Length: 397
Ligand code: ADP
Ligand code: MG
Image (cartoon, rainbow, N blue to C red; front, side, top):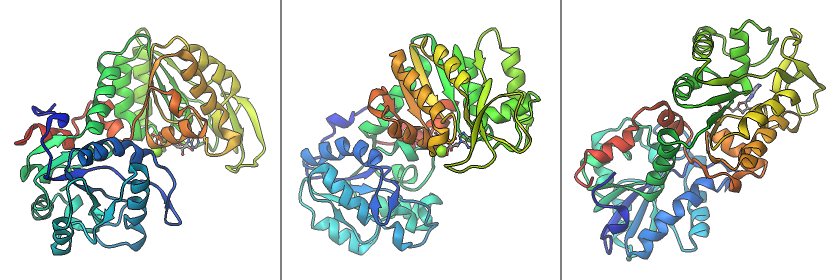
């Protein structure tokens, strides 16, 4: 993408501002999921090894432009230091005199983490003045934050106006693997879709209907499509507006010859969403008005497995049920197992899908688990990511 590749950049003695997506889950001041930190480590280690002064930027959560104590990045600095195997100093803020002083003290190879960018309203507003204050801290800019590339913020877009800017290896590799699957899939190319709502993913479904050979759909998304087909799904989670789902159902029926779309024929249902709820397997036309579909049923899991085993390429987004509870996790686990057993090139996108892959022990058996949630979905839809577009049109690119 860039004319000068990251590996060829001369960074020795230079202050390199690196945007990472270290927006990780915290519980009681501890990082509970290292995926995004681990993914950033090779980039940061490479810069440090090459003698850069590595200044890392990230956001955490949604502090909405003010300081929120429990969204400070100190626990992230600690986890990052451990993963890197070298010290990571924490800056007192993301801009200003104290930060410049901390940077002035850095030796070649040192790593400094700036405080949560979103403590300043200028970050999300893509305010040119805030972007300039960030840019002043460095000699060059590397965007490695794939997970934030769909946001036009000061640290992803604005800053590229003020500094020579380059794509980092994590960003590049995320785009390459998605391109490989979306543009040059080995066929059959099968999408496995699920998750909460159709409305979140209409663009994704539309694109996949154009490029896949087959799609299997479970999760809350399937409930909405089944309701749009006229099935009574009882109290199941579903979109209240059925119009988009009806359009998709129409497309599915219309395009039936090209794309083979599989919806659930049975489901695990319960009257309440709780870990010890009484459950039963029900055919999709036998759901009572007070029941909820909380997972695909065993018949559907078998059917989906048969489809998936044919795949040479799989794109998986969205769990098949409420996998967070064991009673409703079997469908997601079965589908994950089928993907592994297929031996296909498989890419997992979506935060909850990644969590499911980890929970059921498939994570290291997948070809790639994307570190982006929204960014991955927008890229699959075919949208240009502002953070990536900005790199194309800058001095460094
Ligand atoms: P991703 O983050 O992978 O894109 P989503 O955010 O779209 O996935 O959806 C994940 C959520 O959908 C999970 O929290 C899961 O519990 C929920 N879910 C899946 N199936 C159902 C269902 N049948 N009823 C209610 N919630 C569901
Ligand atoms: Mg999600």
